[in-house]
Length: 599
Image (cartoon, rainbow, N blue to C red; front, side, top):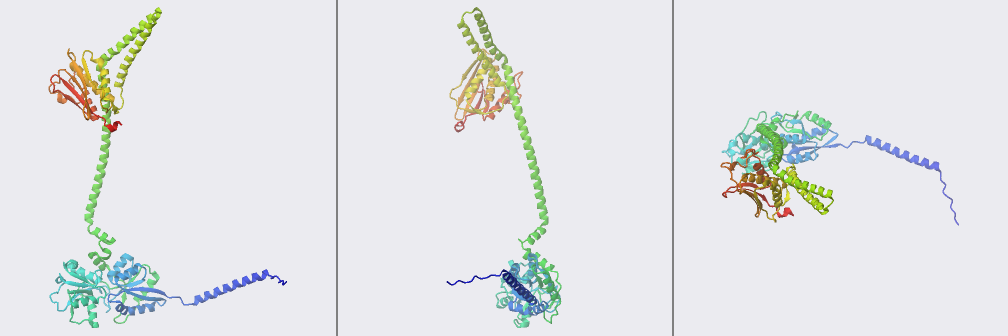
């Protein structure tokens, strides 16, 4: 059998091998770092946008010399030209795809307000003229179109322009407005887009009667042979200052070289230094310190376009400023209205609280008056009630003495038992009288609950019965009356007051008679108290239910007034009827309890 020797391991040799490998890796990293330090850095790409109003090829040709000088001044950067329209360049700025751009004054104003762009320098005219007056617009027509000399002559005519947001069109738009012409209403506009030569072609072909182009464009086209010297003419010419071109509008500062907000400040400083240090040859573009673009800002604010549009932040601010006096008047009116509403609300709350307090006070006064009337009724009925109570008390005393005598003689136990039973009956009779009096004069809060009106009338008659001795009192109370919602004590008080008045009316008459009737109809229960007294004094009927009016020498004048108030609080009505000769009837009605309410 072949036996192999085991592999011999040396721990110290393994450790040495690991250390050697680590040293090798470290040396490689050092060598790589040294090589990287001596390698040429990758140049940073700087993207510069250029407004190509005559097309990309023309823009590249126009700005080629400028870019070549800038590339020499910034050798560690790679400059890339990006041409396009104003909309394209704005989208590139919004997408952080540009570092700088060259554009017209109007577009720069929009970028400065919306994207915090900054002008590093302003171009001087291609011929080296003033940078503050190097941009304008010209309105051109065919040379043979002799009927048009001024801007006002273009009413109703077709006018071509690049776009409504083009700076040249907006410059001409302001001139039209100064002369009372609104190009959007008084002319027919034709927007042909970039390049701007499309405007000249539209006028040449007859598609448009006039065209709005950038200043000096017509002169360039003539110099390039793209237009004949006698083919077009500029109308409504204005002084052009140092600008050696025909213009139809006011002059504005030249195109700015613009720094985008994201561009680093050191790079922007180097770029500005390079622009201002340029030594262009004849016909090339020169740069100077950035001009004040206030005139461009005033133009856009007047037209209410761009950042000063009607629904933009600055447009709203301008609108508010222009209408500030109306705003102040509206604010004062709103302030006055707010103060008025607050004052009315305060007065309303205060008067509501006062009414609540007055209502509560009136309620308490009404309860006190009601209690006073009850006490007055009890005072008037006191002698009769006392006599009524004395009868069972006298009977109790008689029966008690009889029991005492029978108990002393020790005889007639049945008589004693009968006498005791009679004493109990008389005591219950006296107790019932006292209980009715106590309930009647007790001052309890009003509480309307479903009750049987027949029971109220019966209880009132029972309380009144001792007082009515010598007077014929008739009662017609059916047993199957519908329920009503009422405060038993208050309605009983009304009944007793009417009965007491009827009693006083028939007092002293041998044929005095009081009739109490309870009737029903489909909706109410009517309770009437009729007497055959002398009736109501002439002229007193219309004042019967007024507070403190009375025909009694010692009356309070509150009974009928309070009675009507109580009945009306129950949803009913208390009236007097004197139509039947020899009779006076007081009647009150209480609404029946609805069937579902009873359930």
